[in-house]
Each structure stands twice: as structure tokens, then as C-alpha cells.
Image 1: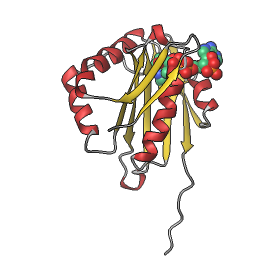
Image 2: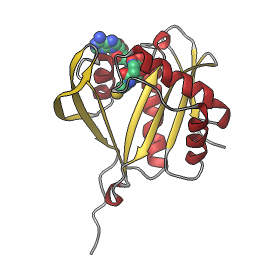
Image 3: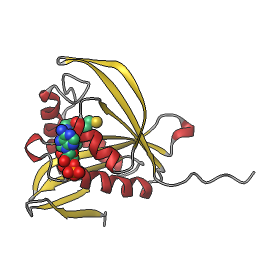
Image 4: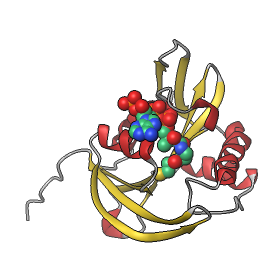
Length: 184
Ligand SMILES: CC(C)(COP(=O)(O)OP(=O)(O)OC[C@H]1O[C@@H](n2cnc3c(N)ncnc32)[C@H](O)[C@@H]1OP(=O)(O)O)[C@@H](O)C(=O)NCCC(=O)NCCS
């Protein structure tokens, strides 16, 4: 049985985070598409993926270190989070994190529950460090990540040419545990 995480939002609504299952594919696809459509928070203008692509991704998490977590607000799909290993062979302990929460469900603690769950799921899957990046004007994301102990490691100036103007990319990371020094 895969682990799941429960909480309650400030207004008492039950929240649940669990690993994605195959029938979640269309929810994840639609959720991603709606955030892309907002045109504000992600450096992409069109969601080219299909539900089928999401299905393949969910299946992949069953036999790789990748993690796909889904959040529910009162049983309704509210957002999701992904962890993917860095490509370098020497960086397999590093997971790249992506997170989205549906517009109507923001500021209720869903992002925080997803992030807490992700840190546990990362350790379970052999990751010891999480990296992520966000837009400099994404104040709730910056607040959420720094409140969980992520540190800012740099800023890429004018990195994204968005409809709202040029945006700096803020790079952040967190080590989940101290690296073990190898005895030679
Ligand atoms: C970033 C995102 C995932 C956060 O999810 P969420 O469910 O709203 O997160 P939470 O409710 O757990 O936490 C949000 C925090 O930001 C705070 N916040 C909200 N607006 C803020 C603002 N303008 N300035 C500072 N903090 C703010 C909230 O008070 C809350 O902090 P608290 O728990 O200490 O009170 C969500 O806003 C989102 O999906 N945005 C669009 C997509 C996106 O930006 N993804 C991340 C790209 S890197």
C-alpha cells in the first residue's frame, strides 16, 4: 500500500495527498492545461501533452524514482506535484520539483501539504536533495518554499519573456539530509 498524507484546510475541509494512479491521467492533464492557460506562472504557452502522455508518466513512476503526487480538496482534484531526477549520472540523488494548485483552491494549505509529502516521498525514493525554480513575482511560491527551508541559490535575470514582461528566474534548493562522505 502506497503512503498518503491527510490534513485539513483552515476552513476545516479535508485535504488528501496520494501517489498518482492511472485513472488520474485526465485530471493531471486538465490541471496542467489550466495553469498554462493562466499565462502567468509557467514558462510555457501551450500544453502540448495529452492524457496519454500523463498515463505513460504515471506508469513510469511505478518502476523508476520519479514521483507524481495528487492533491484532493474534499475529494475534488486540487493540484499535483512532480519529482524527476537530474539527468547527470552523478546527480541521481537530486530531484527537480514542479508543483501546481488549481486557481480556485490556492491559499488553503494544499501547496504546503504537497511539499511536505514530496520531501518524504523523495527520501523514500532515494533522493537527498530537491531543486526548483520560480518566477520572481510568484510571491506565494517564494513564501511557501522559504518557509519550508528551501534556500535561494541564485537569480537568472530576465530569463523568461512572458506576456506580462521579462521575468527573473529564482533558483532554490534544499538538502533533505547531509551527504554521506565516502570512505575510500
Ligand atoms: C505556488 C502554489 C503551488 C502555492 O500553492 P497553495 O496551495 O496556494 O499554497 P499554500 O496555501 O500551502 O501556501 C501559500 C502561502 O503563500 C502565502 N501567500 C499568498 N499570497 C502571498 C503573497 N502575495 N505574498 C506572500 N505570501 C503569500 C499564503 O499566506 C501561504 O502562506 P502561509 O501558509 O504561511 O499562510 C500555487 O499558488 C500555484 O499553483 N500557483 C500557480 C502555479 C505555480 O506558480 N506553480 C509553481 C511554479 S514554480
